Structure formats: C-alpha cells, structure tokens
Length: 132
Image (cartoon, rainbow, N blue to C red; front, top):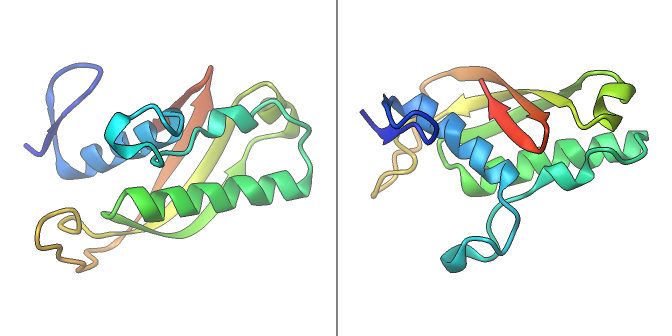
C-alpha cells in the first residue's frame, strides 16, 4: 500500500497514487492549498472556450508543465489532445499522456530511475479530472 483512494478510502498502489495526484493537480485551483499557494493547475477554466490551434497548444503545455513540476514520479514525454471541438466546447476534454514512470522519485532521497514508459488518459468532465 502506498496511499488511500480519496473516493473510496481503500488502499491503492504507487501508480494509482500518482494518477490520483494528477487528478488533484488539474482540479485544484492555485491558491486553494494554504501551504502551497502557487501549486496546482485548474485546467477546467479553459474548457468551453473557443477552440483554436493555439488553445490546444496551451492545453498541451499546461498539462506537461504541471505534471513535470508537481508529480515527480512522472516525466512527460508526449501529450495528445483527443476529442472533437464540440466535445471540448462542452467541457469534455480528453488527453493521452505518455510518461516515464519513476516510482521512487517522490521519496527522500529521490531515486530517479525510470522503470518504464506508461500511457494514461486524462479526461475532464463536469469540472473534474479523471486519470486512468
């Protein structure tokens, strides 16, 4: 066991904990966590805007930067935006994220050994992020 699932209260493994962390990063507005005011990246505020290529690029950049800064177990290799323009305008964004998996990078002292490449989806629906 590494962590506790925030929805069910059940124990989860290290990878599921990292995915849960990604969900929290993308649904917590900056300034909401008292001791980490600069933390997090609420991408839900960008949903529903006019979809142009530059906004897709902003989404990809913010996803990569936020994961690289706030989740040390992942190093983002690539971010793909999936879904139609109408889905994104309706607040339903889907990303496919390819990362280097470093399961002990969050420990003290950190071990940045990459144990493989993983791909997971990140979806935004009704103001919440879901990683799987």
